[in-house]
Length: 108
Image (cartoon, rainbow, N blue to C red; front, side, top):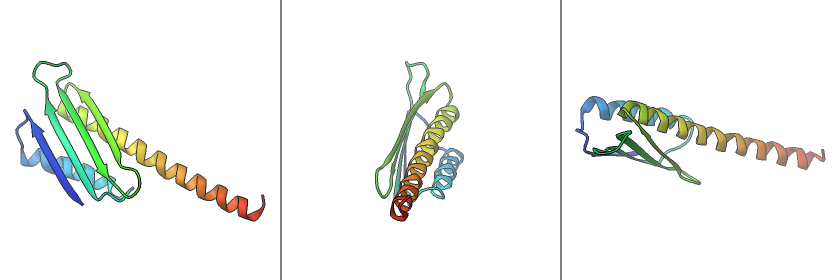
């Protein structure tokens, strides 16, 4: 997996980058991720001031999340929750489709 983290008006820190990396790699267990593009933004004149954009390049449809909150950690946590929800939803839909196809083949 290729991981790209872009910081806008936020200082890049090893602890922050490794925390982001750990969170994204944890998602990789649920769905194959070829590339992760993460943008961490601090908007100086906005409230909430922190924005997180995540684009995961995956086989099939890509997964996106965009969130804002008053702290970077909270904004990133919201983005991760969105991503987990999308990944879970797609996995559930795929399994339901497979089950209905099997059931249709059996004639029932």
